[in-house]
Image (cartoon, rainbow, N blue to C red; front, side, top):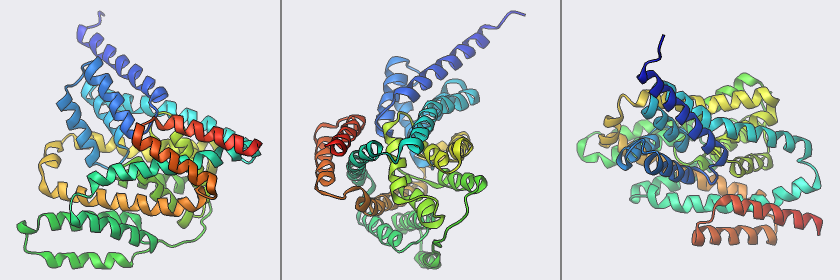
Length: 383
């Protein structure tokens, strides 16, 4: 039987999608903002899959649903190009290279991570990561704090996190309060805010729980299904669940996990792969990766049916404003706590400040700064 031209065209588009996102998975350093810029250059300028306006629509929608924005943008682009097969292929090809690289680095970390040289490298990298997070906080702050209400929400999120309130409750309450506040003229039911007060009594219990793969999967599934904002907000979720509640990680291991996510290309969320490997070997790495990314595929597939409603609804827009402001507050709270582990002497403080100045002044790729931090750490260990 002769192959139909449309089938050949579909097959070629699938190959095109796989080739592009595999390449990006191996080479897209720099975090979510860099990923989006690279994708735009590829699919709008070079390959002309979509127009600038279509790309902005897809990117905007990815910001409205939970999960890693750059990965979800890749999934949307694959879906737009080749339908459901493209949706799965684009996401998998973008995630897979980073996952494999992180697994290799995880093996090296477990085998050599306690040696003086490896410890020296992490000593130099950790303050660089703090500078990268500080730059992200500054950049996101100008967008997330849109008015006095979102500013207050951000401050309250910092305080509530420090008091041990559940992160998901903080985000939901923030979204509801701003949604109602920004649409006050449309309602006469402001006493409804009192319904949120009982949520403040819900806390995170701090105790040590024995490790098991099912609980690992469920925790990362929850994170992937509820995390809004930048990949750096992942810090708050990971520390809340794996350091404070379950007791499976230390603060130092958490920072090391973020470092691994930063120095590899592709999604920052492959930090989950490192944690899974650290806790449960190869099965743990695979299960953690599946758990954190699975919701993104589901949300992108479902959201296509009501994208227009999300973008045009003043209620959804207000809810997202509140979530983003609270996400910024959570990032700030966790950064304050982690700084005590990363900035331990004049050298690390100086490295963090210099890197922050370089990032703000020259917009340097963070990968080069991390490499520089690693060299500083090695020199410090040797000399």
